[in-house]
Amino acid sequence: MKDLKAYVAELIATFTLCFIGAGAIVTNSYTDGAVGLVGIALAHGIAIMIMVYATGHISGGHINPAVTIGFMVTKRIEIGKGIGYIVSQLAGGVLAGFTLRAIFSPAVWGATHLGTPALGSGIGFGSGIMIEAILTFFLVMTVFATAVDSRAPKNIYGIAIGATIVCDILMGGPLTGAAMNPARTFGTGVAAGFFENHLVYWIGPIVGGAVAALLYNNFFMSKED
Image (tube, rainbow, N blue to C red):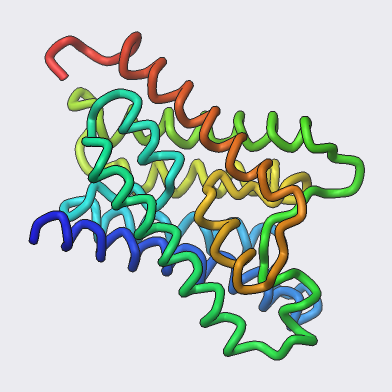
């Protein structure tokens, strides 16, 4: 029952991120740019912040396969449970994608493929992977430094993680969409039928997240933790 509650929490939290974050992108198109890059960044960051606080005590508030894989490679979560988390996150993203598709007309959501991240002009496959890896490195490093490390000030983790998302999108949004999260790309991608350069959004976040997790866990973390 405890694992089931964690899986449902991860599904709801990832649904929230994808619905609000991708929804802000579609709404930006719907309103001819009224939301803007800053608004899109804040939508993602605040949604993550809220859901980290709302679900952190239930599931740890991963909300991202790259974060879960970081916990798996550092043996902070069992493989089977980690896979359950990832399936729940992907399901939450897909559900959010189809919900947005039901809300907006094809003429509206089609322009942005339901807010699915995509490579910007002049950004190649390899560059996209590098950008996503670096941005996700910052995110997972922040997760371990604030939510995992017991030496960190209490109760700042949600704000720190959400703020990292905002900063990453302000820099990387126009370049790759700054997904940092395979579930974020997969969910709307499935609903929109859009998979252009899709592997960028798996390889980059997983590599960047795993490197950050291993570095923090094996180098920065105190032996007591």
